Length: 125
Image 1 (cartoon, rainbow, N blue to C red):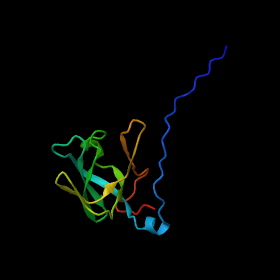
Image 2: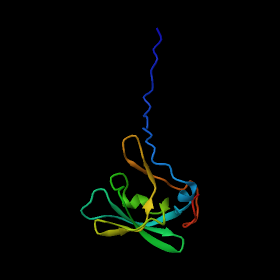
Image 3: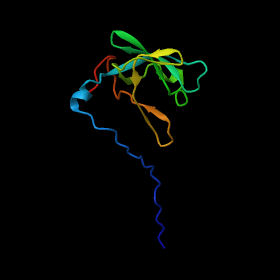
Image 4: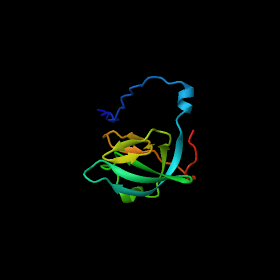
């Protein structure tokens, strides 16, 4: 008697957002950023304050990745940043952009990183 085992492969529910035009997409300034400093935000389990080098400038990002990442493990990482996002204040700290991340099957954030060494500030297209 044969026994077939069906692998349990997680399925991602694909909820599509409203379609945007190519011209709207071109407005998004995605850049490679290098994390040069990272620390936990006081009184938050989830938020980390990151200093990110984007070419000749540095930006402060506040990201909700603190349950999945340690500050020490992030320093030196090359990430993808939305560089022209309007600043937003989170727990009294200004976030001057947003890093890109997906969520794994357990709901944990997974940061989008550069596969090879590339200069901070390089546009992503």
